[in-house]
Length: 376
Image (cartoon, rainbow, N blue to C red):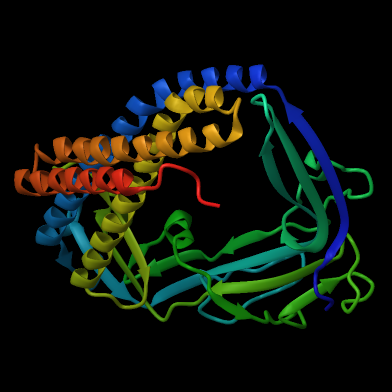
Protein backbone atom coordinates (compact mmCIF):
# COMPACT_ATOMS: atom_id res chain seq x y z
CA UNK A 1 0.00 0.00 0.00
CA UNK A 2 1.65 3.29 -1.00
CA UNK A 3 2.23 5.94 1.60
CA UNK A 4 -0.24 8.81 1.34
CA UNK A 5 1.41 11.95 -0.03
CA UNK A 6 0.62 15.41 -1.27
CA UNK A 7 -1.00 15.21 -4.71
CA UNK A 8 -1.80 18.87 -5.34
CA UNK A 9 -1.08 22.24 -3.72
CA UNK A 10 -3.09 25.44 -4.10
CA UNK A 11 -2.11 28.78 -2.54
CA UNK A 12 -4.43 31.73 -2.03
CA UNK A 13 -3.57 35.22 -0.76
CA UNK A 14 -6.26 37.46 0.72
CA UNK A 15 -6.11 40.92 2.27
CA UNK A 16 -8.30 42.62 4.84
CA UNK A 17 -8.43 46.34 5.46
CA UNK A 18 -8.13 47.94 8.87
CA UNK A 19 -11.74 49.17 8.75
CA UNK A 20 -12.98 45.67 7.90
CA UNK A 21 -10.97 44.20 10.80
CA UNK A 22 -12.36 46.83 13.16
CA UNK A 23 -15.91 45.99 12.09
CA UNK A 24 -15.23 42.29 12.71
CA UNK A 25 -13.76 43.10 16.12
CA UNK A 26 -16.86 45.05 17.09
CA UNK A 27 -19.01 42.09 16.04
CA UNK A 28 -16.77 39.84 18.14
CA UNK A 29 -17.32 42.18 21.08
CA UNK A 30 -21.04 41.49 20.90
CA UNK A 31 -20.35 37.75 20.78
CA UNK A 32 -18.09 38.12 23.82
CA UNK A 33 -20.89 39.83 25.74
CA UNK A 34 -22.98 36.69 25.18
CA UNK A 35 -20.16 34.20 25.82
CA UNK A 36 -19.22 35.54 29.25
CA UNK A 37 -22.60 34.76 30.88
CA UNK A 38 -22.97 31.67 28.68
CA UNK A 39 -19.69 30.14 29.85
CA UNK A 40 -20.57 31.04 33.45
CA UNK A 41 -23.89 29.22 33.12
CA UNK A 42 -22.10 26.18 31.69
CA UNK A 43 -19.63 26.09 34.59
CA UNK A 44 -22.37 26.51 37.18
CA UNK A 45 -24.59 23.85 35.58
CA UNK A 46 -21.68 21.41 35.32
CA UNK A 47 -20.99 21.56 39.05
CA UNK A 48 -24.64 20.92 39.84
CA UNK A 49 -24.69 18.03 37.36
CA UNK A 50 -21.55 16.51 38.89
CA UNK A 51 -22.95 16.68 42.41
CA UNK A 52 -26.31 15.25 41.32
CA UNK A 53 -24.62 12.35 39.53
CA UNK A 54 -22.34 11.66 42.49
CA UNK A 55 -25.33 11.61 44.84
CA UNK A 56 -27.27 9.34 42.47
CA UNK A 57 -24.37 6.89 42.26
CA UNK A 58 -24.00 6.87 46.04
CA UNK A 59 -27.72 6.27 46.38
CA UNK A 60 -27.63 3.45 43.85
CA UNK A 61 -24.62 1.80 45.47
CA UNK A 62 -26.57 1.59 48.71
CA UNK A 63 -29.73 0.18 47.10
CA UNK A 64 -28.47 -2.22 44.42
CA UNK A 65 -29.59 -5.82 44.87
CA UNK A 66 -27.42 -8.59 43.34
CA UNK A 67 -29.69 -11.27 41.82
CA UNK A 68 -29.02 -14.55 40.03
CA UNK A 69 -32.09 -14.64 37.80
CA UNK A 70 -35.40 -13.00 37.01
CA UNK A 71 -37.74 -12.80 40.01
CA UNK A 72 -41.08 -10.98 39.78
CA UNK A 73 -40.72 -9.92 43.40
CA UNK A 74 -37.93 -7.51 42.41
CA UNK A 75 -40.08 -5.50 40.01
CA UNK A 76 -38.98 -1.84 40.05
CA UNK A 77 -35.94 -2.47 42.24
CA UNK A 78 -32.35 -1.62 41.29
CA UNK A 79 -30.75 -4.99 40.50
CA UNK A 80 -27.33 -6.24 39.48
CA UNK A 81 -27.16 -9.20 37.10
CA UNK A 82 -24.02 -10.80 35.70
CA UNK A 83 -23.49 -13.88 33.56
CA UNK A 84 -23.23 -15.23 30.02
CA UNK A 85 -25.77 -14.10 27.46
CA UNK A 86 -27.97 -16.48 25.51
CA UNK A 87 -28.58 -15.67 21.83
CA UNK A 88 -31.62 -16.80 19.87
CA UNK A 89 -30.57 -15.33 16.51
CA UNK A 90 -26.96 -14.26 16.00
CA UNK A 91 -26.15 -11.16 13.92
CA UNK A 92 -25.31 -11.51 10.23
CA UNK A 93 -24.18 -9.22 7.42
CA UNK A 94 -26.56 -10.25 4.61
CA UNK A 95 -24.90 -8.15 1.90
CA UNK A 96 -21.67 -10.16 2.18
CA UNK A 97 -23.09 -13.34 3.69
CA UNK A 98 -20.88 -12.76 6.71
CA UNK A 99 -21.91 -14.75 9.80
CA UNK A 100 -19.66 -14.25 12.87
CA UNK A 101 -18.66 -16.96 15.37
CA UNK A 102 -20.95 -18.09 18.18
CA UNK A 103 -21.35 -15.70 21.07
CA UNK A 104 -21.32 -12.52 18.95
CA UNK A 105 -23.75 -9.88 20.18
CA UNK A 106 -22.76 -7.04 17.83
CA UNK A 107 -21.24 -7.25 14.37
CA UNK A 108 -19.86 -3.98 13.01
CA UNK A 109 -18.98 -3.55 9.36
CA UNK A 110 -16.57 -0.65 8.72
CA UNK A 111 -16.28 0.62 5.16
CA UNK A 112 -13.40 2.93 4.21
CA UNK A 113 -13.03 4.61 0.82
CA UNK A 114 -9.86 5.81 -0.88
CA UNK A 115 -10.63 9.48 -1.46
CA UNK A 116 -9.41 13.04 -1.54
CA UNK A 117 -8.79 15.01 1.66
CA UNK A 118 -8.19 18.75 1.95
CA UNK A 119 -5.61 20.05 4.41
CA UNK A 120 -4.96 23.73 4.93
CA UNK A 121 -2.73 26.06 6.87
CA UNK A 122 -2.73 29.85 7.01
CA UNK A 123 -0.22 32.53 7.90
CA UNK A 124 -1.39 36.06 8.63
CA UNK A 125 0.90 39.09 8.54
CA UNK A 126 0.04 42.55 9.87
CA UNK A 127 0.68 45.44 7.51
CA UNK A 128 1.46 49.03 8.33
CA UNK A 129 -1.85 50.85 8.61
CA UNK A 130 -3.70 48.05 10.42
CA UNK A 131 -4.55 45.79 7.49
CA UNK A 132 -3.60 42.12 7.23
CA UNK A 133 -2.47 39.76 4.51
CA UNK A 134 -3.27 36.05 4.83
CA UNK A 135 -1.58 33.34 2.78
CA UNK A 136 -3.54 30.07 2.84
CA UNK A 137 -2.07 26.86 1.47
CA UNK A 138 -4.47 24.07 0.52
CA UNK A 139 -3.03 20.58 0.11
CA UNK A 140 -5.02 17.79 -1.52
CA UNK A 141 -3.97 14.28 -0.55
CA UNK A 142 -5.44 10.86 -1.21
CA UNK A 143 -6.04 8.41 1.62
CA UNK A 144 -8.45 6.07 3.36
CA UNK A 145 -11.36 7.46 5.35
CA UNK A 146 -14.67 6.10 6.59
CA UNK A 147 -17.72 7.52 4.88
CA UNK A 148 -17.48 10.17 2.18
CA UNK A 149 -15.69 13.49 2.53
CA UNK A 150 -17.80 16.17 0.86
CA UNK A 151 -15.49 17.37 -1.91
CA UNK A 152 -18.00 20.06 -2.92
CA UNK A 153 -16.82 22.01 0.15
CA UNK A 154 -13.18 21.97 -0.98
CA UNK A 155 -11.64 25.31 -1.86
CA UNK A 156 -10.64 23.82 -5.21
CA UNK A 157 -13.07 20.96 -5.95
CA UNK A 158 -12.15 20.60 -9.62
CA UNK A 159 -10.11 17.46 -10.08
CA UNK A 160 -10.73 16.35 -6.47
CA UNK A 161 -14.24 14.91 -6.59
CA UNK A 162 -15.09 12.03 -4.26
CA UNK A 163 -17.69 9.51 -5.47
CA UNK A 164 -20.48 8.07 -3.35
CA UNK A 165 -19.32 4.74 -1.84
CA UNK A 166 -21.13 1.65 -3.04
CA UNK A 167 -21.28 0.23 0.49
CA UNK A 168 -21.74 1.85 3.89
CA UNK A 169 -20.72 1.06 7.45
CA UNK A 170 -23.42 -0.78 9.39
CA UNK A 171 -24.04 -2.44 12.74
CA UNK A 172 -25.90 -5.74 13.11
CA UNK A 173 -27.29 -6.87 16.47
CA UNK A 174 -28.23 -10.29 17.77
CA UNK A 175 -31.94 -10.92 18.36
CA UNK A 176 -33.63 -12.60 21.33
CA UNK A 177 -30.72 -12.04 23.74
CA UNK A 178 -31.34 -12.96 27.38
CA UNK A 179 -29.25 -12.66 30.52
CA UNK A 180 -30.25 -15.00 33.33
CA UNK A 181 -33.86 -14.79 32.17
CA UNK A 182 -33.84 -11.02 31.48
CA UNK A 183 -34.35 -9.79 27.92
CA UNK A 184 -31.82 -7.29 26.58
CA UNK A 185 -32.91 -4.58 24.14
CA UNK A 186 -30.99 -3.46 21.06
CA UNK A 187 -30.11 -0.18 22.78
CA UNK A 188 -28.58 -2.07 25.71
CA UNK A 189 -26.58 -4.32 23.37
CA UNK A 190 -25.45 -1.28 21.41
CA UNK A 191 -23.50 0.03 24.40
CA UNK A 192 -21.15 -2.97 24.34
CA UNK A 193 -17.79 -2.21 22.65
CA UNK A 194 -17.04 -4.11 19.44
CA UNK A 195 -13.27 -4.27 19.64
CA UNK A 196 -12.50 -7.76 18.35
CA UNK A 197 -11.36 -7.91 14.73
CA UNK A 198 -12.60 -11.08 13.08
CA UNK A 199 -12.99 -12.91 9.82
CA UNK A 200 -16.68 -13.86 9.58
CA UNK A 201 -17.28 -17.28 8.01
CA UNK A 202 -18.36 -16.65 4.43
CA UNK A 203 -16.49 -13.36 4.12
CA UNK A 204 -13.27 -15.05 3.07
CA UNK A 205 -10.80 -12.61 4.68
CA UNK A 206 -10.69 -10.18 7.59
CA UNK A 207 -10.22 -7.41 4.98
CA UNK A 208 -12.47 -7.34 1.92
CA UNK A 209 -11.15 -5.13 -0.89
CA UNK A 210 -13.36 -3.73 -3.64
CA UNK A 211 -11.22 -2.33 -6.42
CA UNK A 212 -8.85 -3.28 -9.20
CA UNK A 213 -5.52 -3.51 -7.35
CA UNK A 214 -5.06 -3.35 -3.56
CA UNK A 215 -1.39 -2.44 -4.07
CA UNK A 216 -2.35 0.63 -6.14
CA UNK A 217 -5.66 1.97 -4.83
CA UNK A 218 -7.68 4.42 -6.88
CA UNK A 219 -10.24 7.02 -5.88
CA UNK A 220 -13.47 5.18 -5.01
CA UNK A 221 -11.85 1.87 -4.00
CA UNK A 222 -13.25 0.34 -0.80
CA UNK A 223 -11.81 -1.75 1.99
CA UNK A 224 -14.14 -3.45 4.45
CA UNK A 225 -13.38 -4.89 7.88
CA UNK A 226 -15.55 -6.48 10.55
CA UNK A 227 -15.33 -6.18 14.31
CA UNK A 228 -17.47 -7.86 16.94
CA UNK A 229 -18.55 -7.72 20.55
CA UNK A 230 -18.17 -11.23 21.97
CA UNK A 231 -18.03 -10.85 25.75
CA UNK A 232 -17.85 -14.01 27.82
CA UNK A 233 -20.28 -12.38 30.25
CA UNK A 234 -22.38 -9.24 30.65
CA UNK A 235 -22.99 -7.19 33.78
CA UNK A 236 -26.05 -4.97 34.17
CA UNK A 237 -27.20 -2.55 36.85
CA UNK A 238 -30.69 -1.20 36.18
CA UNK A 239 -34.27 -1.30 37.36
CA UNK A 240 -36.10 -4.56 36.79
CA UNK A 241 -39.00 -3.83 34.46
CA UNK A 242 -41.14 -6.76 33.45
CA UNK A 243 -38.84 -9.30 31.80
CA UNK A 244 -36.14 -6.74 31.07
CA UNK A 245 -34.34 -3.66 32.32
CA UNK A 246 -35.17 0.04 32.46
CA UNK A 247 -33.37 3.12 33.83
CA UNK A 248 -33.69 3.46 37.60
CA UNK A 249 -34.85 6.92 38.71
CA UNK A 250 -32.95 8.02 41.83
CA UNK A 251 -34.20 10.54 44.35
CA UNK A 252 -31.22 12.73 43.45
CA UNK A 253 -32.54 13.03 39.88
CA UNK A 254 -30.40 10.76 37.67
CA UNK A 255 -31.53 7.61 35.87
CA UNK A 256 -29.15 4.71 36.36
CA UNK A 257 -28.53 2.18 33.59
CA UNK A 258 -25.15 0.44 33.31
CA UNK A 259 -24.30 -2.30 30.82
CA UNK A 260 -20.70 -3.55 30.70
CA UNK A 261 -18.83 -6.43 29.13
CA UNK A 262 -17.39 -8.99 31.53
CA UNK A 263 -18.40 -10.23 34.95
CA UNK A 264 -18.19 -7.09 37.09
CA UNK A 265 -19.21 -6.66 40.73
CA UNK A 266 -21.55 -3.80 41.72
CA UNK A 267 -18.65 -2.05 43.50
CA UNK A 268 -16.51 -2.17 40.34
CA UNK A 269 -19.30 -0.82 38.16
CA UNK A 270 -20.13 2.07 40.49
CA UNK A 271 -16.42 2.89 40.86
CA UNK A 272 -16.08 3.07 37.07
CA UNK A 273 -19.16 5.31 36.87
CA UNK A 274 -17.73 7.63 39.52
CA UNK A 275 -14.46 7.89 37.60
CA UNK A 276 -16.39 8.67 34.41
CA UNK A 277 -18.33 11.39 36.22
CA UNK A 278 -15.12 12.97 37.52
CA UNK A 279 -13.54 12.88 34.05
CA UNK A 280 -16.59 14.49 32.40
CA UNK A 281 -16.65 17.16 35.11
CA UNK A 282 -13.06 18.21 34.42
CA UNK A 283 -13.62 18.16 30.65
CA UNK A 284 -16.61 20.50 30.95
CA UNK A 285 -14.69 22.73 33.36
CA UNK A 286 -11.92 23.07 30.78
CA UNK A 287 -14.45 23.80 28.02
CA UNK A 288 -16.14 26.46 30.14
CA UNK A 289 -12.83 28.11 31.05
CA UNK A 290 -11.67 28.19 27.41
CA UNK A 291 -14.97 29.72 26.30
CA UNK A 292 -14.65 32.34 29.02
CA UNK A 293 -11.09 33.21 27.96
CA UNK A 294 -12.23 33.54 24.34
CA UNK A 295 -15.09 35.77 25.48
CA UNK A 296 -12.79 38.17 27.33
CA UNK A 297 -10.34 38.16 24.40
CA UNK A 298 -13.17 39.10 22.03
CA UNK A 299 -14.25 41.91 24.35
CA UNK A 300 -10.77 43.46 24.20
CA UNK A 301 -10.00 42.70 20.57
CA UNK A 302 -11.09 46.15 19.29
CA UNK A 303 -8.29 47.66 21.39
CA UNK A 304 -5.72 45.42 19.70
CA UNK A 305 -7.06 46.17 16.22
CA UNK A 306 -6.81 49.90 16.91
CA UNK A 307 -3.20 49.44 17.97
CA UNK A 308 -2.39 47.31 14.90
CA UNK A 309 -2.03 50.51 12.86
CA UNK A 310 1.60 50.24 14.03
CA UNK A 311 2.36 46.45 14.01
CA UNK A 312 4.91 46.40 16.92
CA UNK A 313 2.48 48.35 19.08
CA UNK A 314 -0.30 45.95 18.14
CA UNK A 315 1.84 43.01 19.27
CA UNK A 316 2.43 44.59 22.69
CA UNK A 317 -1.23 45.49 23.11
CA UNK A 318 -2.27 41.98 22.03
CA UNK A 319 0.07 40.46 24.60
CA UNK A 320 -1.39 42.68 27.30
CA UNK A 321 -5.03 42.00 26.41
CA UNK A 322 -4.38 38.24 26.33
CA UNK A 323 -2.81 38.47 29.76
CA UNK A 324 -5.78 40.45 31.08
CA UNK A 325 -8.19 37.90 29.58
CA UNK A 326 -6.25 35.11 31.29
CA UNK A 327 -6.32 36.88 34.65
CA UNK A 328 -10.06 37.59 34.41
CA UNK A 329 -10.70 33.94 33.47
CA UNK A 330 -8.62 32.67 36.39
CA UNK A 331 -10.66 34.87 38.73
CA UNK A 332 -14.19 34.43 37.34
CA UNK A 333 -14.14 30.73 36.34
CA UNK A 334 -13.06 29.43 39.78
CA UNK A 335 -15.42 31.99 41.31
CA UNK A 336 -18.40 30.54 39.44
CA UNK A 337 -17.32 27.01 40.40
CA UNK A 338 -16.95 28.08 44.03
CA UNK A 339 -20.41 29.66 44.12
CA UNK A 340 -21.91 26.49 42.64
CA UNK A 341 -20.18 24.31 45.22
CA UNK A 342 -21.27 26.57 48.07
CA UNK A 343 -24.62 24.80 47.88
CA UNK A 344 -22.96 21.45 48.54
CA UNK A 345 -19.34 21.58 49.80
CA UNK A 346 -18.44 24.95 51.35
CA UNK A 347 -14.87 23.90 52.26
CA UNK A 348 -14.04 22.83 48.71
CA UNK A 349 -15.58 26.02 47.35
CA UNK A 350 -13.33 28.20 49.49
CA UNK A 351 -10.24 26.19 48.43
CA UNK A 352 -11.06 26.54 44.70
CA UNK A 353 -11.61 30.29 45.05
CA UNK A 354 -8.32 30.72 46.90
CA UNK A 355 -6.46 28.84 44.16
CA UNK A 356 -7.91 31.08 41.46
CA UNK A 357 -6.97 34.28 43.31
CA UNK A 358 -3.44 32.98 43.93
CA UNK A 359 -2.99 32.04 40.25
CA UNK A 360 -4.23 35.44 39.09
CA UNK A 361 -1.93 37.21 41.55
CA UNK A 362 1.02 35.16 40.29
CA UNK A 363 0.26 36.09 36.65
CA UNK A 364 0.05 39.77 37.58
CA UNK A 365 3.45 39.62 39.25
CA UNK A 366 4.85 37.86 36.18
CA UNK A 367 3.55 40.65 33.93
CA UNK A 368 5.31 43.28 36.02
CA UNK A 369 8.59 41.48 35.49
CA UNK A 370 8.04 40.99 31.72
CA UNK A 371 10.22 43.09 29.34
CA UNK A 372 8.60 46.25 28.04
CA UNK A 373 9.48 45.58 24.38
CA UNK A 374 9.12 42.57 22.11
CA UNK A 375 12.26 40.41 22.11
CA UNK A 376 14.20 40.16 18.89
